Length: 228
Image (tube, rainbow, N blue to C red; front, side):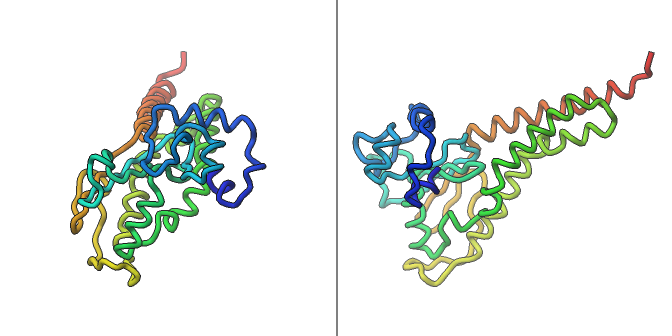
């Protein structure tokens, strides 16, 4: 959806998306840069050119704090949520900071992964259905993607963090040496403090992974027992 809005294709957005987005935004983070009166209204956000994020569950959370972003005005620093198919939060401001230090914008990373994300999730759902329907020894392999997905997501995320930190460009007004951004926990770079932690989507994926492992063990036990 953000891509369609950026391309001026708002007429192609289905009518049902607007109330869903408004509901999804209820109780979520509101950026200090969000136009007043448009906080939870997609039509007004489009009209006033507010920054619109993805509507899927966020998997990872990153926040950046610095002295020039006082707590009074920025209680959460500059937060960005990573989704399976994009981002939400203060993306523009984070990209401004990235440009300041010579780092690529967020959109430069994981382009193919983000494009394939929804299809990967659909594929995993279909594999789970096949696992339920097929009761053969090889069927346990159908649950491996859902069992390993949280680990795979974190591996890709950490890998892209490394890529961002080791591909610094000359355009930065503030020069810093190549570094590895903190993928999990709290880190410090120059006068910036970064926080990087799982978000609700990751915990959902983790629950699915645990259930997948239990299903694999149960199926293995079932097929290993002698038939009556």
